[in-house]
Length: 153
Image (cartoon, rainbow, N blue to C red; front, side, top):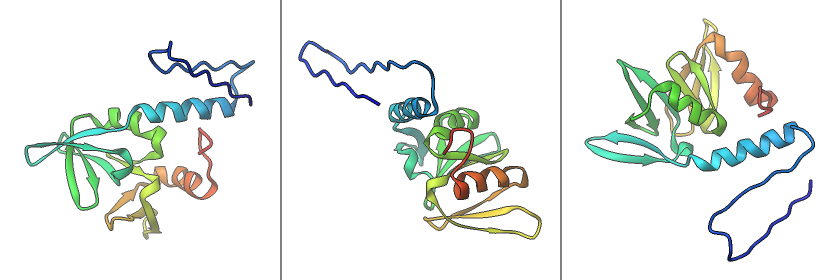
């Protein structure tokens, strides 16, 4: 890979141009990383205050009684977006679906344990925990243990 950087006062904003013969997994990963940089904050409400959160601070987000909450440590913050909208923003940032109502941050997982009925209990570094339904366990194992998945992460 060849990288060219052209610094000049004539440029008003940052422009990135990629020239390639074809789309490759390496190129897709570069594009994914560039998109991650664009969404840096999530907006939520906690006790009548608007809160700005970095996605890396969030352990998981979940839907309950037609509202969506983000959990950061012991804080439960009501989010301004719907669960599917948050999923679109967060999946490129190492989040994945744990169940129909929960999306978890893979980088905040400390350890996990298998329950008797095949559900995985995930413990986060902050001390919180959430459950992964059976239909998502295989994908989680692939992403955590094997480093695999659709996007190679």
